Image 1 (cartoon, rainbow, N blue to C red):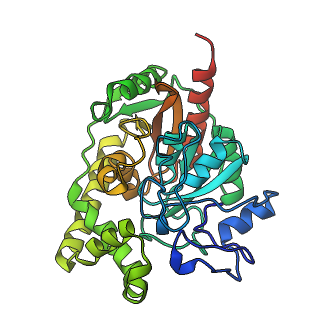
Image 2: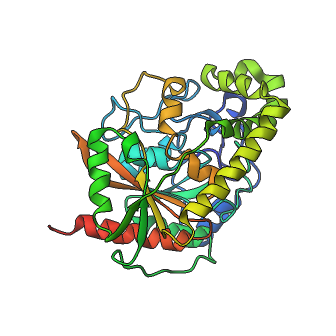
Length: 353
């Protein structure tokens, strides 16, 4: 369980020195649902401080390491959850995703990660980052593992049957990826008979909407405990606090236009959007979140802005033992369909040629 979710009687730090000794009295609803379904919490996993970062380097509690290659980052902010699954320390793990925090570490560590439709899984008892972006979702070594956890997290989730040959996919952002990653994702695209290029352009002007929400979450806490924030997150919160009302309002309007344009682009045209999850394999440690952030969230953040379900699925080695990851996404409410499509792709990739 990512140490962002409250667990009654068990220390929950949110990756922050401020909450180093925090033991909540109540358990987050997502945790409660999993336990009711028969899952057991075997541990709390490390994360980027307050879930605001993509490297899971944490100066308070130590950096998470990538089990595939300790010289590479595990991704973040749910890096500990991904690492625990990849290292076979648990069957499944829970992460949170506001801009890619499930999908980025899943891609870096070579596992499966699922960001559900915004609002499908309760976030009660999970420390917020940017509430209109925040989601809670599963990570596992297979799509089936994620689907099983999702049925506990969202019991109303229906089952879906899919045929890869009948799914219409729109392929986007291949040119944003390094050649080795692009080749693996292009191969996945060939598994679908009905495929077409899809033009999607995410406007950077929408970022201040996320930033203002993060500023609102941390406004009072930061004012009281500024010196207890790590340097990385402190720098970002300071930037967030400088977002003006005009910038925020313009960003909200830009985000809404992006939603409308994307809906128009896919409506009646494609059933599923296929992209790389990351434009590269897991980067080396030591570069830092501030230098890596914009590129690593570039292909995941748009689906957070849309509120769509999105699945990160390993799709073969790209560099040495480091995997590429393909991202499958569809309009809000299509969670069962995305999981079913991911399972079909997983089976096809595992089949002998």
